[in-house]
Amino acid sequence: MYALYKLLRFLKPHWVFAVIAPLLMVGEVLLDLMQPRLIQRIIDVGIARSDIPAVIHTGFWMIGFMLIAGLFGAGCGYFAVRAAYGMGGDLRGALFRKVQTLSFANLDTLETGAMITRLTSDVNQVQEMVMMMMRGMVRMPLQLVGCLVMASMTSPRLGLIFIVILPALLIALVTIIRKTFPLYRQVQRALDAVNSVLQENLAGVRVIKAFARSEHESARFAVANNALIKQMTTAVRMSSRTTPVMMLTLNIGVVAALWIAEGQVQVSGMKVGEVVVFINYLGLAVITLTMFSNLIIQISRAQASARRVVELLESEPALEKPPEASERTTHLKGRVAFENVSFSYYPTGQDPVLKNISFVAEPGETVALLGATGSGKSTLVQLIPRFYDACQGRVLLDDVDVRDIPEVELRAHISIALQETVLFSTTIRNNISLGVPEAPMEKLQEVAHAAQAAEFINHLPDGYETVVGQRGVNLSGGQKQRLAIARALLPQPSILIFDDSTSAVDVRTEAHIQRALEDNDRRQTRFIVAQRISSVLTADKIIVLDDGEIIGQGNHAQLLESCAVYREIYDSQTENGVLIHSGH
Ligand SMILES: Nc1ncnc2c1ncn2[C@@H]1O[C@H](COP(=O)(O)OP(=O)(O)O)[C@@H](O)[C@H]1O
Ligand SMILES: [Mg+2]
Image 1 (cartoon, rainbow, N blue to C red):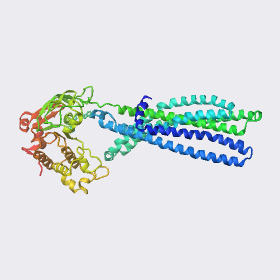
Image 2: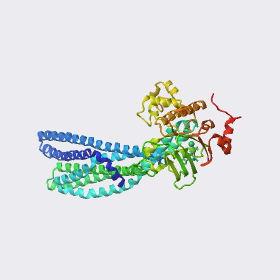
Image 3: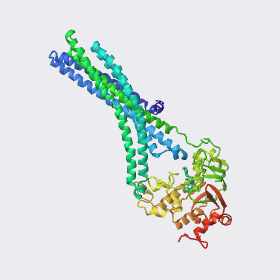
Image 4: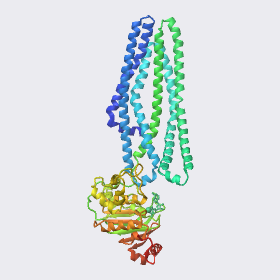
């Protein structure tokens, strides 16, 4: 129950609704409880004495009560929805914000599918439970006690039936419910699996088609889907056992009441109306208990979900939090130094991806990183904005450990174009101005021009207002990369990182981008991860990585002398000293 309890704080902002809803329910319950008494009046006064005006009169009262009770009920429903959905919305918001704060290492371990389940289905379960609580927490006890009192007042003798039946019923219910509790946790887990397959497939549907794997993937989905159906069926079958138990009890109660009453009507002149009323209250009491069991089942579902929600809500970013305040401020020279940095993606430190990396990038220098795929280039540059923390050694920015710089400040100084371009389904303009939403149009045009994107953007139907992605135009890989470059240029950071950002751009365009960057007189430290010799020739410093180690460091001329691997790469991309792919 602890997890659910923790989530109740999300109900706080909506407490007014959460209080009004049950209060209105009190009105509905009291009015409902009056109905059987009115029926009794119709039977014992109206019909027994053939008093037609009394029947009509009482009938009007019944309708009136029913209408007012309905109003109370609708009001309760309205406020319950406001409270529960308000809370659900806040909870989803909090989860979403939480996901935004997670570190790269957290995100590596969380499955997108499971996160989607948490933000949708799990929150829904909690929300439904709160709604049922709003309606039920007053209604159930009040109605149950009300039935007991009213029935006993009608006929103390018949009231004894309640005393025997209700505890027996409760025991049966509790037994069933205890069995359903763990089942719903498995239901949510099965839902995770479905969402994971779904998410992967929706994201990768083109690849699946390209490799003619549709049937295989459909089968994989069917497995997850069937598992969900099975779990759900088991859980519902278990919880639906409550219904026959209820009906059986109700019928036993009715038979018992009729049996006792049969003698009473003759011996002590008990009226038929009293018996009818009693059976009415008995029925209402059983209905109340059915509602109660449904609520308990919903609570058990919500409990399973709440645990999962709390788990995500309380997951801590894997990075150590840097001090919030800092004496360092806006200006950064842009010196970057790696001091004996080693890094592994595993907390245990096994399979290090970077080993003992040391180098310095002076302010305004362009540092190129060269090396085979998997040699650790992307990992290396991701340590600068602190997407991950070094396991050993330090990464320094202007002689301060990046771990001592508040995240927001750190990221404000660094722009990175990641190896995989992500565009959002919005306009080109919004995609470029991601880091500086308020940037004026001229700035946008300027960076688009530098990134060699201006031309193709201007050819798009709506220029900068063209929507890209899922519901808009599709761009080529190279065009996407150029948008990512423009996006990274816009904030004019002290440190600029391009992680293989021109791999899909033709050599000539790449050369133009390079020239535009060189013409930019802003002193900026740049890191350029590249595959082509042509992209690194003019760099102030070239670092050659091999399997996580630096095997060469220097400028082009120096490396040709000193680094065999560099010379090898150079030879493979040139012919008689001329670059093979030089742009024409
Ligand atoms: N998120 C990750 N979790 C675990 N291993 C990773 C992760 N990202 C990369 N690696 C591994 O780290 C090594 C270096 O990868 P990377 O830095 O991307 O190399 P490069 O950019 O030079 O191609 C590779 O062996 C890769 O499999
Ligand atoms: Mg890479």
